[in-house]
Length: 384
Image (cartoon, rainbow, N blue to C red; front, side, top):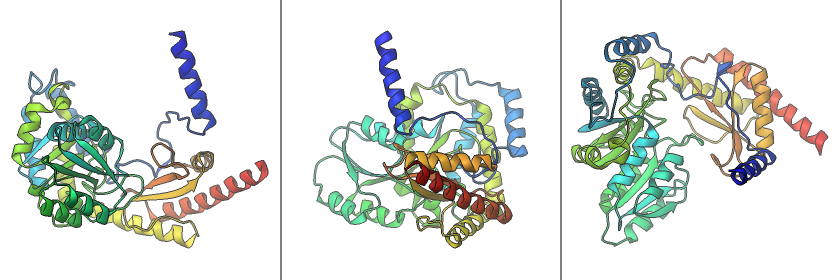
């Protein structure tokens, strides 16, 4: 045990020296970092449904859904979500991580091939690694390379293409229709993670699959419920055969205690708000446009795009931490994102726009960000 403690101590020291040490920090200040894009996490209607369901059904589900953990409210919200996504079936998991592991580690088998975008997030990467399929990492959003690889693979196994509809750290959106066309031509299965898109995009708010007009039955999607939907867990939606198979074989479903039933009740309320209040996602889009325009006018560079995720790349780890700390002192809750979450040398502030932000607050924030960047540059010049 002493040897392990010393080794861990060395690893922690290495992280600190590299500017990669992390700490837990409760929310404080204007929210420009969370994934609560529609401001639903504290909505009293969701909270009321959750509290009522907890009083009725208790706090815990008591077991996996294949044992005593099943509840009628799970079936109800899954039916509701499947209709929301225009898919045959949906299955509710305790987290997006478990849902991603379930899909790829269950459906992909030895002899199959998974083509995964280089910037897919950690749970997709782990899911690909845990499958028994051959793994091919495709350069980010490189359709030509993907098409060449998929078309050139004449092996006997099935092919899967895995992509996020909205990338969580860069805020860019791949051309889903082109990915779907490649998969359709090659007979491959498209798996789309809609974690940061569900609730925010589409006429009904069901995500970028809807906005791009794709056939939801021709693919499998993973939809996190703890971001724009404001609650917790995740839904896998798609063909009935896929959901049936996950119930039978997905280890993260079979061997996990079911989520608290009250969460499913709160999600029913969330879906109602998303469908009945399109103004929320319209405000997100408007505020994202405003912030991007204000940053450009202030001479602060951001990657091209239109999404509510606005990355400000500052480069060095210590500089990102310093800028974030300066903004926190000024009353803005912004966090530094560093490797391995993003590539080395691209530490950044990941700005996340939500429906509750006003133009006046965004003006104040851009001014504060400009001052924080200048402070960081001045400190760097003195230390060098």
